[in-house]
Length: 312
Length: 315
Picture 1 (cartoon, rainbow over the protein chains, first blue to last red):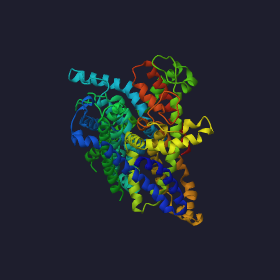
Picture 2 (cartoon, each protein chain N blue to C red):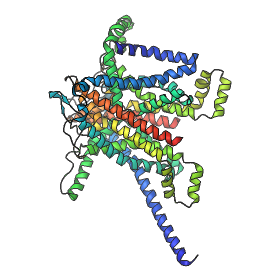
Picture 3 (cartoon, rainbow over the protein chains, first blue to last red):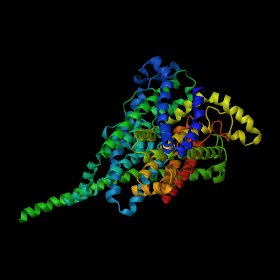
Picture 4 (cartoon, rainbow over the protein chains, first blue to last red):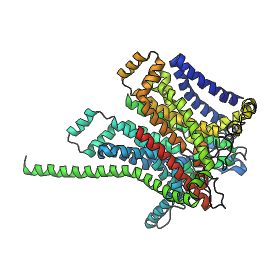
């Protein structure tokens, strides 16, 4: 009944908000603000409620144990959590240098005519459907990385380290390509905010372009940290592309990035279609979603705090 | 200056110049490395995609027919294309309808405390994992579905069904998975995009222009939504187009809301979408379906590139 009321009252609510815009503008506008805040609150609350059965049964063990055995109705998501952390770490380590490169390339190196085109290409990377990244990762990037990593490792340690084309490492590299534009956008914004007098002072000291770029990046460091956290948030939440290349190893705990693994979001995407057949699987997956939500909220709070601290 | 120190200065200078070139070269290399994969991806999708469309029976067949079963020689993505267009259009319209006033609020009323709370909320929502939004809509849908059908949609659909054959395709008792749930999930993804860009467009309106708008418009509503709208319309249009391009390619929020369907079916039940078909078909072991995944990816990419280029030219 609660859900029914929620859905049914939503439409009159929005109509009323529009009507209120005409009568008392400020209050009408506030309704839209309230709508978005309520959505986030409801979302978190819903996941708590949906995940409650398994939290009641297992306590926090569902977040701390590594097992995924639907037949025995025993669920734990720590292997997925490790997978999320490892893929995000690989992605961030590769993406941050590239994002810095994008910011400097656009602002210092390219002539004015090419700036717009290069910027559009970076934006297009952010707009590309994630499933197309996944398709490319599945048939091109995965096999390619498999060959490259194994020929390097044969040379170094005399053995293949990458057991299959679809591993946590593949997912991390693919994620790096996908999240670079988001980090780059924030860093570009900060880079462009370096005041003109500061820039003039840098060149008046006789700095070369490279030295000027380093100083300006230091000046924009709040934005770099902010971009770091926003990109991290994207990397942790990305689903479809990761699920296609991560290897789908649901149960075995691994910290080796060259093995196939699983992340929380891809666990949800790959297991949810069969979840209804088991008693506790749906709550377990909602517990994973709850974890993702809380991480997302925390990371965004940090990122927003860092960027706003820089602006004051 | 003695000759010796002069030489030293020169040497240091040359060293700095080398470091300068090396450093800038490194940055340029990293920057280019960020966009090079884009060309590989677009090339890969179009080269294999165009072959795929030709081998599955040509463009028209591919755009209208049902998808190939593992034993078929030809087929297409007709039902998915219809589903994508319907859900994207609905999601984009609703997203603009809510996102635009929200953007005005957080852009124009910056001094209000609650506006800052709402801005933080929008910033969180734009970064939210899209699969979480899909799960949320699924959870609400499964809570509301039964009562919704019993008290509202059942009577409504039987009341208006005499209007014609088309009614049950759009309105009727809902299944757990349906196009409207998918559209709502896409809306929730679209809202923050539109809101943030609208907000920054309104925030960048100069103070004299704002005062002039308030002076001439009479009411605050007219000042904000009629006069100033013209100053920001270009940015807002770009936001709407880019947001539409983004949601047209979303897969994760549709997994548990629209679910996917291989046939032309009413929008009140499971509905197919092009990204869902790419996701499903790419992971099957059947060659013909993998080929059709590439064809579908080429169609999807064409839709998104078109919207993106329009947005860039207009904006």
